[in-house]
Figure 1 (cartoon, helix red, strand yellow):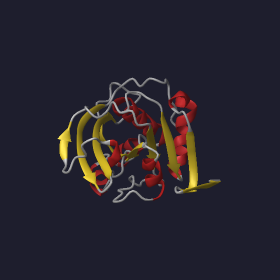
Figure 2 (cartoon, helix red, strand yellow; figure 1 turned 90 degrees about the horizontal axis):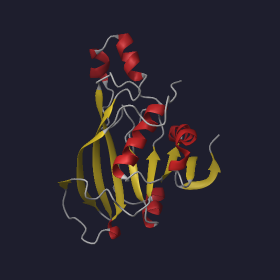
Figure 3 (spheres, one colour; figure 1 turned 135 degrees about the horizontal axis):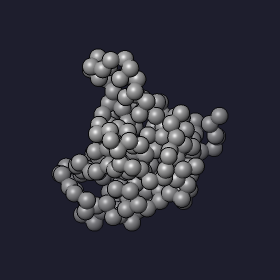
Figure 4 (cartoon, one colour; figure 1 turned 120 degrees about the vertical axis):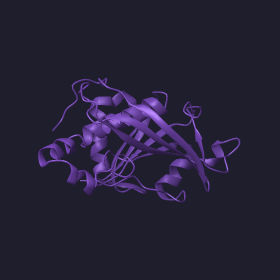
Amino acid sequence: MPVFSQLEPSVTAQRKSTRLQRVGDMIFLDHVLDAPLDWENPADNRRMDLFAREVRPVKAWQSPPLSDAEVGDEFDDCDLPGLVFFQGGPGCPSPRPLSADGWLGEALSRGFRVFLLDQRGTGRSSAVDASLAESLPAAELAEYLSHLRAPDIVRDAEAVRRLLCADRPWISLGQSFGGFITLTYLPIHLPRFPHRVPVYRRPCHCSRGHR
């Protein structure tokens, strides 16, 4: 299992684009970051897209946008507390909500900005598909897939937090495999979390723990 050699990554991620749109009572900020495939090796120049959809309550905006538009970093420095959601799986992209229901609606009603991260290799985060598998020899494919594990996803989450949350602490919510990502995250970056919600059987019910 890969481990972190240091808290600070030896390579960095950069923002590629952010697109803003309104869906019902939610504001979406669709962020695309340019991230390294290998967080531990500065000599490895392979890069990948990292997609995170930030959801904010529309009531937090003085002048809510009516249509989608490309924006810059002017919305990053936000007073709303952050919450990152790690999807179960592995191999599943983050949810694509059309309404503020369930745990998401609860989080938004409490004034959180919620980050729905497509874990690397899924969704819009340089998804692994048949064309990639067919283009690489077996050994190279295995090496590539070795960079799609929980510690690498934690590095990605840290890049999102630093770039988009002004390096402020946030809350983690994990469902199934996403809970194991949170448990990987905590021992290394504990100061980043004012509260932790590791894993639950059902994201909208917080009465029973996952075993």
